Length: 145
Image (cartoon, rainbow, N blue to C red; front, top):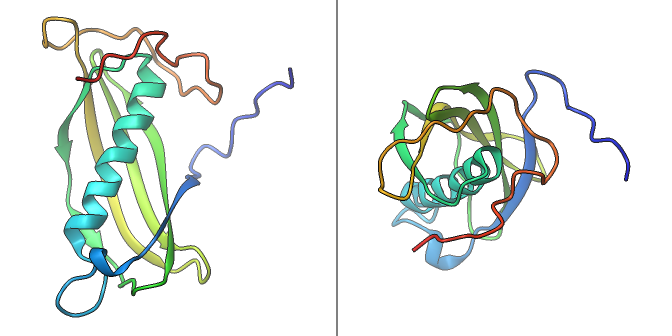
C-alpha cells in the first residue's frame, strides 16, 4: 500500500460535489442557503466520524457563515473541510464551498465543532491529536440511529 501524503497544512481538500437542482433553489432562483447548510453539516459529520473513529458525533457549534456568492440551477459545487484542532472530546474544522468550474467561493465557515459521544450520549474523550489521511479510523461497527 502506498503511504498517505498529508496535504499542505492550510489547504482544504475539495472532495464532495453536488449538482444544484430545482428543488435546491430559493424564490430568487439561486441555491437556498438551508440546502447548502444541510449538505455542509452532513459532510462535516461524515468527516468527524472518519477523524474520530466513532459513528456517534454531534454538531456542537457553527461560527459565522459567510455567503460570498450565489449558485444557480445546473451549477456544480464542491465542498471542502479541514480539521483545524482536536479537543479532548471535540474536533474543530473549517469549511469552504466553491463553484467547481469557476472555482469562485460560494460560502466559508471558519469554525465547525463536533463532539464525540459515548454509548450513553455524553461527551467521550477520543484520544486523537492529528488528522488522518487514511481510512484507518473508520468505525468497524456503525450505529448511527
